[in-house]
Structure formats: C-alpha cells, structure tokens
Image (cartoon, rainbow, N blue to C red):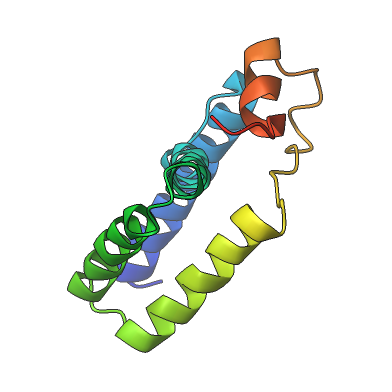
Length: 121
C-alpha cells in the first residue's frame, strides 16, 4: 500500500468516527445548520416580500446567493436553475424537512414551530 493510500484510509477512518460521534451525540453538522438557515431565509424573505408588496426583497437574496455560487466557480445559469427550483419547493410547494431517522425522539416544541409554521411572519 502506498503512503498516499494509507493516508486516505486514515482520513476515511477519522471521518467515519466523526460522523458516528455526531450521530451518537445528536449533534448537527455544518450542513444541517446551513439547510435550516437557508430554508428559513428563503421562506421568511418570500413572505416578507409578499406582505410588503416588494418582490425586490426576494431578488436581493437570490442575487446574493447566486453571486456566492458563481464566486465559488459554479455556472450562473445552472446555479440560477437550481436555486429557482429550491425556492419553488420551499415557498410554493410547501416543502419541509423530513426528520432524520436516527433522531427519532419528538423534537422540542420550538423546533416544530420553526419547521411546521405556515403563518405570515
């Protein structure tokens, strides 16, 4: 086995141990927090744009997200399409998060309010 291959194996082992520890501790990872934050940002901004009759509010968020994706090297058109589909899912489709199977306990009331809420604020 080459030294490089051994390093990958060690990294794979460390990553697996890290994921198992997060699961055991029921600790969210960076991507879990980012998904919730993005969902909240999109839904709340869209509702505010409708409530204030100011669709430009939503465009500001879309433009900022697209600028960030393009700055990372992603294609503008492809990014715009993916973001548009995601916004449609979140806002028009009423898409919500599915519970992670390894987190089977009932979430606290505050979490249910955040994820299940359908009012205008």
